[in-house]
Image (cartoon, rainbow, N blue to C red):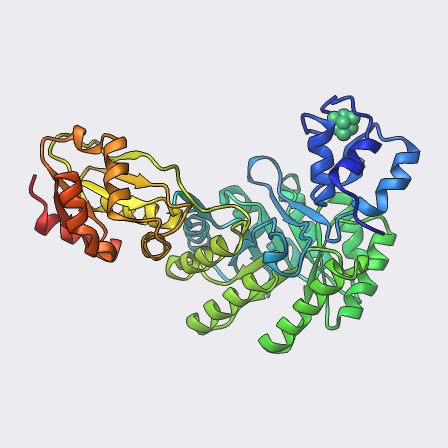
Length: 447
Ligand code: SF4
């Protein structure tokens, strides 16, 4: 069926703006429905006639599944395209770090606390791990249940209970079911028991199979039992096989609308080599894991992974820029440095972070270059000496200080003379790379 526009959909809605769908207006709901980010049943007032018209067109090609409860819940899936530039990717890969069942109590608690601390600030955002996988390799069901209970008490994340034994999963759920963890796996052998447990405790269920046809067969059977909150866990022989499967799976779901595979995907990385592990994990974030479970608690591995995720899930239709204005970092005064830069988000936050680390407080005058970085803006003629002078003057940056010194980025050191002559300031060429700014300020700055 042809996709309907937001206006077509709006015409079919009651147009009362009652808000029962959790959107303020029917138009807001129609826009979300048109981009397949909500399902029609979220509006309880749709007529049967409208339902018939809208149902097929508005159903998301990949189901949105919620893991967890309350503040820490995570939504995965709901993707609508194969390639990010076609629209955007909606829900960042949920990163799950793994706790296995081999730890003594004190080590277990320590590991959960380490996982809780995996949180970083980067370009103005908090980037964070989202789930904790509790893996069962060797424990009897009651012992696994106890382990899950202990992890659940300490964890700030929703859990992913991983065992092929439905009895072990149920023992875990007896302790943490209120947190609505993801459970898995359902296989060709245990799917009936797993589905029963998932239904009873109302938890999302991961389904595992070797071939895509096995997965489709299983989701068909399980959804036939009334359980629709499913996540796909394809088995593979190595990365190549996995990426072929995940790419095909995504295509079948979002381009062909093949509903038995229209669910989020979970990938697992448990390579022993830390660099191999990171390479595999990154590939999964790129293609097309909705959830990635990885067996590390080391921040040197998690930070780059979250950094890649942050970049991939940026909306390509939205400019990554900050407001062009005069910023104050720390508690600047009349002796503080005045720096200049452009309003590309990454450029600004890198500079701000380095100023913060340097121990100096500073003013940063930020020019509107349509979100371009320093060198791109210069190449595009958006960043000129005259433009720098105009921006710094308009923002009153030099009025804030008792000195006459302006630091411009090293990448546009060739503009120094123009800025100096036009602005009448003592212009200092700063470093090309923000990372060296702390050393530069310590060595060079004198008001
Ligand atoms: S619940 Fe239905 S009628 Fe009410 S605002 Fe939402 S779309 Fe409109």
